[in-house]
Length: 283
Ligand code: FE2
Image (cartoon, rainbow, N blue to C red; front, side):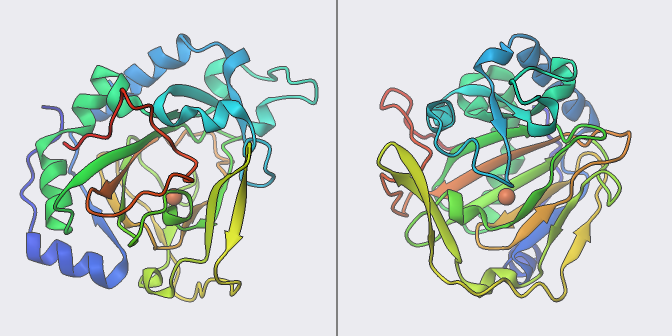
C-alpha cells in the first residue's frame, strides 16, 4: 500500500481540525507514492485528446455551462489552463504544459488512483475526523504549471459539493513541495464557522450560483500553508481557502480527494453526478 502507516493521534487531530477547519499532516504519504501518482497522471495526460479537454478558469465562467464539464463527475477528463489556449482554441504550449487538472473520478476509474485514494491510513484519518460513513465523491489532479498555473480564488468546497447538513472533507496531497512561490494553499483558521456563503448548482441545461450570504469572508488571520512533498492537508468543506497562480519555474502538483458523509443528503442538483452503474463507494 503506497501511503505510510503513520499513526494518527485521533483526539489531537479531531480537536485541531474542529478548531481551525483544517489540519496539516506532514509525512503521511511516502515520497515514492507521490512519484508513482505523478507518473500515472503523466500517462493519463499522454492518452488525453486535447480536443476533448475543457478550458478551466475560476475568473470567468467559461467551463460552467459546458456539457463536457457537467458530465465529468464520473469520468476522467482533462482541463486546460486558460492562458495555454489562444482565442481560436489552439494550444500555445505542449499538452503536458497546458493541462490544468484531471477530474473527477480517477479514484474509481483508474486502478493506481484508486489504490492511492483507498490507503488504510486515509480511512483512519477520515474516521478520526468524524466521518463514520465516508463516500469518495471527487478526485482532482492539479498540475499548477510553471509560469502559467492559474490561481484558485477564495472559496468553500461545500459551495461546489453541497450536502445537508454540510459534511464534506477535502484531502489535499502535496505531490511536490509547495510554498508561497509556486502557489501553496492559503486558509483562514476558524473560517469554517462563518457559514456557507454560496452554492453552485445545476439549473436547466447550465449552472447557477446562489448567494446564501453576501458578506465577504473575514480573512483576518489567513495563513499560507507551505508544505513538503508527502504532506496531506485535511480541509473542512466550509473553511475558506485559495491558492495563488504559479509564476515560478517550478510546478506544484497536488492531488485532491473529496469525501462526503453517507448519512448526509446529496441533492440531485449538485453539479457532480454519477451514473447509476458507478455508485459512490467508501474506502
Ligand atoms: Fe477547494
